[in-house]
Image (cartoon, rainbow, N blue to C red; front, side, top):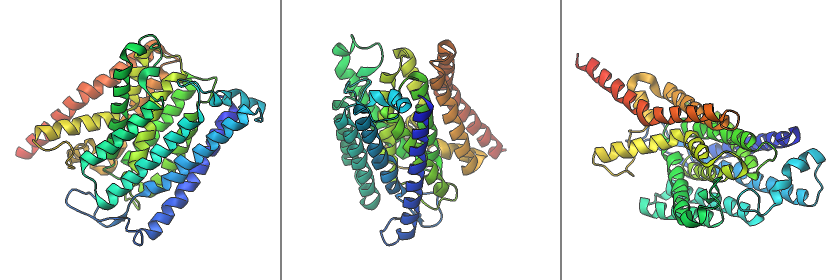
Length: 384
C-alpha cells in the first residue's frame, strides 16, 4: 500500500468516526422516544437505565460509507480515472477473481448481510428471540456468505486439495462466521470491552492486509478502516460508565464483518496455510477463548450454553479483584498480544510461528491454569 492508499483509508476512518459520533448522539437523545433503553436486571452490571443499540449508528459509518467508497474506487479504477499512485494500489479491486480480487455483487451481499444481522440484533434487543431461531438466521446468513465465495477454500496452498475437502472447508467457514457473531455478542458484557477488542482485531487485520500483501489494497481494508473509525467514536460513549450500549444490533454485524475479513484476508497474501491458520487463531484468540471457556463452565454447571450469566472472562477477572475497568484493560492487552504474531508472520516467519504457538499455548493452557490457581488462592484467603 502506498501513501495515497493509506491516506484514503485514514479519510474513510475519519468520516466513519464522524458519522458514528453523530449517530450515537442522536440515539442517546431519542432513546426514550424510540424505546432503546436497557434497564437493570438480575444478570446485568449497570445500575441505571442506559440507552442501548448504539450499533444502529454503525450502519452509516461501517456499512453504507465503505460500500459507497469501495464501489466508487472500483469503478473509477476500472475506468482508469484515479491518480496514478492510487490507481496502482486500487486496480485489483475490480477484478472478479473469487479468491484475491473483487466482484461487485459480493460486496453488496456483505453489506446487505451485515444490515440484516443488525436488524436481527435490533429485533432481539427489542422483543427477544429464542436462541434456535436466532441461530438459524445467523446460519442462513453465513451459508449465503460462503456460497458467495467467502470460504476457507481460498487458503493459500489449498488449490489442489480444495476440490476434495471443499464441503468440509465450507462447513468450517459457516461455523467460523456463526461462532464469531456469537463470540462478539457474548463479549459485550462490560463497558468498552467488545468495542475495544473488536477495534484491536480490526486494526490488526489492516496490519495483516498491509504486511501479507503490501502491493495492493484489498477492498476489505477500507471496510476495516471504517470499522476502526466507527468503534473509536463509539468508545467515547461506551467507556465506563457507559452513556450508550452497543446492543445486539451492533455486536452481530461487527462480529460478522470481522469473521468475513478473517476468511478473505489469506487470499491476498503469500503466507502458507499453516501459518495462516495460526495467525487467524491468534487474531481472534480473545473472543474464541471467552466463548469456549464460558460454554465449558456452563455445561459443567449443568446449565444451557445459551443461558446468560456472569461466567465470562471479564467477570472472572473482576471477581479476582481487578475490578471492571482493569479487567477490560487486561483483556484488551491480551487481544493486542494475541494479534501481534499474525502481523509478524511475513517479516519473520520462524519467529512469528514460534510466537503464535506460544500465544495459543497460553490461551489453551497457561491462562486457564492461571485462572484456576488464582481462584483457589482467593478461596483459601477467604477461608482463613
